[in-house]
Amino acid sequence: YVNVLNREFLVYDCDRFTKHWYKTNLGYDDAELEKINVQEPVPDLAKPALAPYNGYGTLEDSLQNCISLIPKPPRRDMHKLMNKDKIILRFNLAIVETDTHKHSAIDLKRKFILSYFMMDDTMQLF
Image (cartoon, rainbow, N blue to C red; front, side):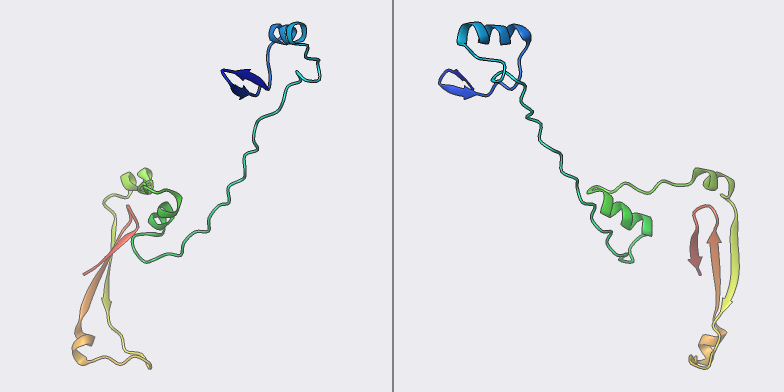
């Protein structure tokens, strides 16, 4: 330690000129002027477990909420967006009775259209 203005400072390393000056003027020896390792070890951070899917948004949205405090939107597949932009698969749907599920006559007459958009893998039920 070196006293500077009534404060103790730890000298953990110095150049050859300063070592020589401490040896000749203050009487330090080589053992006292050895370099001291003051670097603190960096602890490994534990990765938190991912929260279960809560039903809002997509799975990628929920994953971004766990990774960052300010979530970024998931990256879009630009190749898919450009090449499959106008491709929409449409299906006619109807309610069907089964042994376990009975429906009224009005429900059995209802018709639905399911549209599957290839560009972003979303569905629309009309």
